[in-house]
Picture 1 (cartoon, one colour):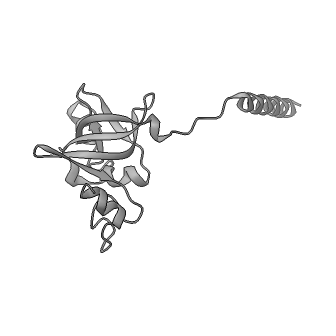
Picture 2 (cartoon, rainbow, N blue to C red; picture 1 turned 180 degrees about the vertical axis):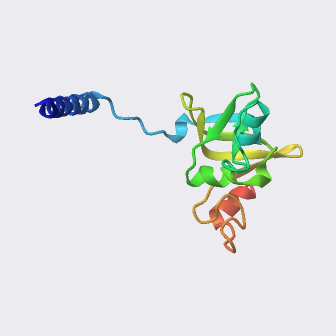
Picture 3 (cartoon, rainbow, N blue to C red; picture 1 turned 90 degrees about the horizontal axis):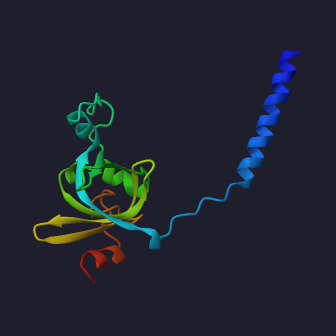
Length: 156
């Protein structure tokens, strides 16, 4: 008799949870107008955590995955999607000063990247992701930048 009681209580809990979820407002999808600029430096998340005393085992698990060290010392990770993955895994960006345009998810310490600018000398160079091109020439083997991306890179 006890298993039936648990099953009935379990079913009641699921129905109640379903009603509660149905009453929750839908999550608002992020829009370009909601983007914010985040200045900082690309750093290895695991190495940064290790420098703070964590047993992050950077070379074993995070393998140098990049995050953003903000001017206030906050360490942000990136959403690992089509735009974020190329940044997260690019060792050539480590240590570079950057301004990221994207969306932050404060309760998670994550930023979803829309595009970014790297400081090269005294100027800022813009990088925007293209499904055809990646972030820059060579990202997709022998495919060079499409006309639209090439125009944006040249400031046209």
